[in-house]
Image (cartoon, rainbow, N blue to C red):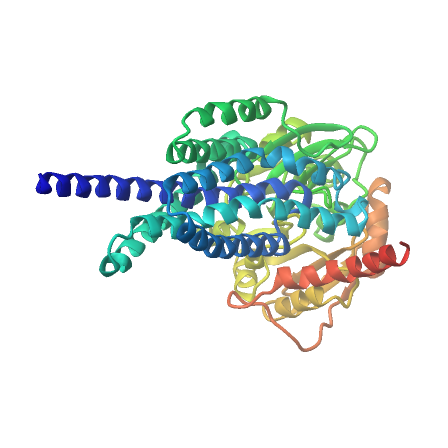
Length: 519
């Protein structure tokens, strides 16, 4: 009888151990699913820059630390699986309700970062991010709690704890891959959070011995999820879509035009207007084909094509007035943006041969050379990908330029002395003998050009009358760069986002002070 009892106890212990391993796997996945879903929920309103990621990751880590501490204490006081089930159940309810709970705070930035008072932007960002801390605290409590319930002998405590944390880490891997590669791009952020919450509710209800709780809680939350998704309202919104890379919105722009924004309303990534030119920095690129001999066909490569603004301008506004066309190859990493370009931005096959690939990978794997290479790629709305700013990248570009070819970049800078602009000029000078700079249409836009020989300033009189306004601005400000000594960007060190953030803060902090002084 004693042997039977001992065997039954060992079997029960094995079943509890297996069940707790499954529970920590589920909750480990829940932590990462919440983190990635939080990032995508915040991205349409605040972007997904280092600032946002840093705040979010910091709060997630803080929540986990608090959860570990709290979970260990709670387990010592109440070493009962029902209490652990209640913790997991609460985390699931909170997680499933997150999209609806975040809505009021997200509304304050519905006009976009540039149209919202700075104080409200900061308050909303912190407020929404803090919403994600409570479920993470609860999920962080699970592993130490599970260790307490699993350890029967001190001699086995190390092995038991190691096994449980290994299963929790395996769950974190699942919580990383499944949302990123499947649920978020296929079903969206709301469905990902609700699905994660539903799984946690089921696990918690089972552990707590409350199977009815799943239906009692999940059904109302499911009905709430079935309601129309609330994302950022925008006047004249035509389309909004989550892509594998970002959140994209197409909206009416001006008189009969359309614009594309990704991840927030602070910038425009593509635009189309029925009249010649756009009134934005894209118009500066229209000037460049006229720097080449009129009868010479131009092969152009556009890295970061978006929805096709630059190829469309070349095809619509430049080709009809030049004696030879501009043949464009457009490289865009996100095929959804190309599809939006064909549907809303009049991107026709004749305007560009489109390649869906990372810009730098394209240069590494293709040997074709071009007369004009345009770099207009941005990640996270306002950040040039650092891989497209380094000496090694510009050496690749130089190898793909025809003799007499020209590189042109759009750079956001608050003034001509901005460190980001100066560092880019300095980096270009390590590869190209001649680097020039000019203002482009737009508050913070500069046209940076580089070549193996000097290019004279454009002559506005050589352009058709409709294209002369941007040519006058470019010609009036065209000059050779003189960045002076300083940092040269390399693949090892290119703090592009840091320098961009410094420019943002240089504009945001005075607004915050003014807002505080007016209260």
